[in-house]
Image (cartoon, rainbow, N blue to C red; front, side, top):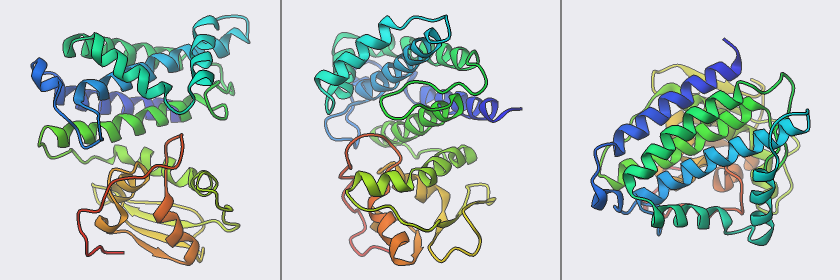
Length: 276
């Protein structure tokens, strides 16, 4: 199994889990608010399907450079991004949610997940894919889709008053959170640290997930689920059992952001006492 195969298998499972949360909803249920301000469940699924469909357009646009594919649809998305770089993604989600029933959104999301899986498997080895930021590998694109599906799945579960499932699939989210460390600093207007960090996280199964040199002075330890909540800004640091050693690692936990876009404000703390 290749790295891409593994990530795609986890992405498929994560999508199926989120789908199970919404499959039985009636139309009023689709309009249930989530913890993301201004977003209901319909908007959340609309965002996921739009991004899956846009990822397929990006792949087609990239493959055109190799003599196949279709770049027109991707160019149209890019023009919208130029016109409203800060808001066009949210606008697309809200427009879809307003013009589609929940059942239609779900059906379209099911189709988009299948299409993206198939399209990613067609990308030649070594080919980087166009995106709104730096070009990325198929495995990186799949990981980004898994991160978003997981994070928005939390919003859906909590909006419905359900306990979100924990699984070792979050190792992909943890990996992305670690790899975007420098991005988090630069995105917050800070100089990126010169030294590597050591990250040691316990997955839901009890397995230890690690990254970075063992002898690094800057360290982050704790539950992998908490780390993933942090880097997707689904929880405030004060509510998480993460421990930072070193000033740079400590700062990272204040600004960590695994997703693209302006530095997010995150969520307000629920536990005012904190456990930093």
